Image (cartoon, rainbow, N blue to C red; front, top):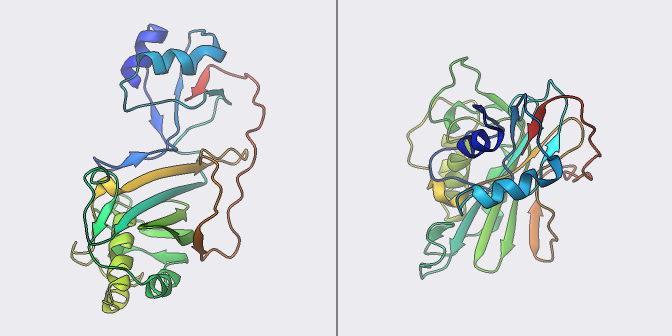
Length: 253
């Protein structure tokens, strides 16, 4: 992305990304920002990028934002989705996109385990590498389980995430659904860092959306005609994209 933008604007471009994910993690709602001193036809920026980017990267929309905007530091909330395929047979098509569990998972104990994770806690026991500032306290605003046939989708929204935090949460809830209820106690927030047995593959994880103070949310709109178990007291609303005026040379893609 940075190399393509640098060619389009004929100057070095440095990107700020909303989510810094592990290798192999997908993103359907990533947001990036950058500053440029060059002019460009704004209404054609997404088209120009998609014509030059690799096939595994696609830009949905672009907007001009305030000079102090940062895709990373201006974010209020991030939402991740972890996808599980629960059936006896594996899928050759979904192997790169969903974590395969050969036995059925009971959603009820998964929800019970998830309830302990809602709110503000010290998530040291769900962290891979402790951040440099040592702060492991995060606020999980929503954690729900969506059933769609053989697929389970775990939706997690928080003000921020630690290294491997979502993958460890997913692994812990999978073990709860497989009747290993002891994992809830061993990985309850506030406990010391535990082993990595609960961590699940990165390829099953998606950065689904990022929410900002001006109301913009990069989460794609969806309709829920299937079963969804939402543990958030107040489900997140997806506001309409506001009309942004050009105030600086900073762009978001």
